[in-house]
Image (tube, rainbow, N blue to C red):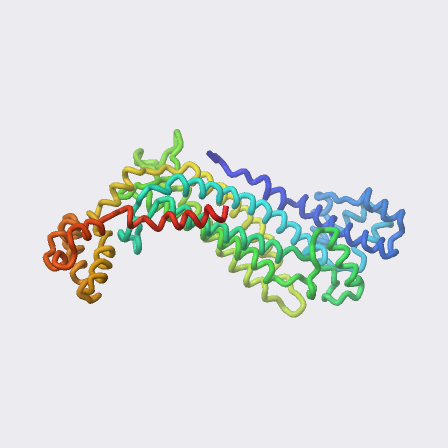
Length: 432
């Protein structure tokens, strides 16, 4: 069981230390590219490679004075290099560094999210296979409809998680670009060919065109993919919350030894983890809305996006990984009650066979509306009088005049209603 969220991966990625490390990686890639072009002496490059560093405390102190984080960072780096610092940040602007480094942070974070998502997908498939042969009532509008295999719930979530992973991989590709194009994206002080070479060192592609910043639709795609992931996790959570209602109690999230559900009612076993996921998914969707707004900047740039991104990116990735870990654990240890599932299946005394009877009457040549009215009349009697629907149908003289008893009894086959389940599972087997 997960007792607490271990945020080490995401916390490390979005730490000040790692942010400045990525900034320095970008600066070094650019300096090395200048050296390849003969614009940095070999001795200076050796010194830069060996000694370039920064001090976070010093950066903070400088920033309090200059009110500019990149200048504070560069000043700290300069203090580690002496005169050779002239070859660092040569011909570039702040956001050549900041946006390129942000791409590295996003790529690193998405790799963590993808790994956690793949783990959930595996757990969902295991549950789908475990409950493949457990009949359950399907519900539409919250009302009993026709039977399903309980395992199909997990198959639907598994398939949706696969789409989430595909979107996240695509978002990682979309965001894996940098820019070294200068103050307004015109390559006046650093050549476009050098940009390609510098970014290749970092495993990134170059934007075909940029202003002073990388355009924020790329970043919005990342947040939208995370928000969609959140909706899937909330979908799973909401279903478990419904199934855990006392009146249904077909499944419930794990309730651990020593856990307590209420300060006043000792009997309570509440779906608190699933409710928590529902709440956090709302925050993820809110972050996506902010990311969409961030794409609308003045002219070649403003920094209205910057303050928001300092919040939404680390927070969104923390939320996504937390929710994935939590929901993976809930699903892995989900408590399922087959007896209650079977009880609920029979709660309406077979009215779920209504469409089979309707279809049989249509095959016998009865007009659809007439057939519908006949079947509905017996279904409503069964529902309201709590009587067996098959018995009422078998006793109906109009239906009996068209259909033999054997044909009607054949229509009351639960196995026949679930026959299509095999085809669904075979699709997954063929793909595996």
